[in-house]
Image (cartoon, rainbow, N blue to C red; front, side, top):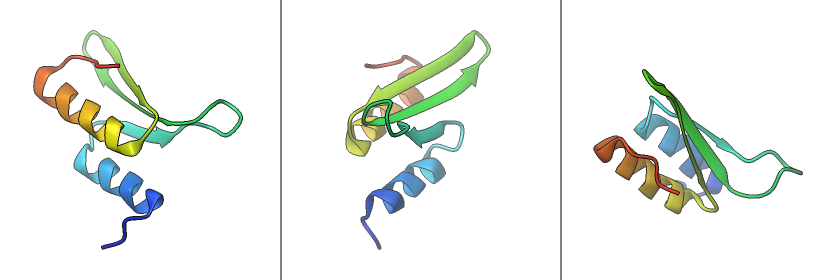
Length: 68
């Protein structure tokens, strides 16, 4: 299995289908964002690395809380 950043990003999108996972736009900084719509509004996450974002997504899925 490929371990390129693009492959890891695609894997996260499949693993967490309720989330919109994206790379931060060039010129806007570095890192990755994820967001999903909830009844009470929008939940957003940000991380410098995909590994950190995956951990935050895992926590958010289990606790329902946003971690920064």
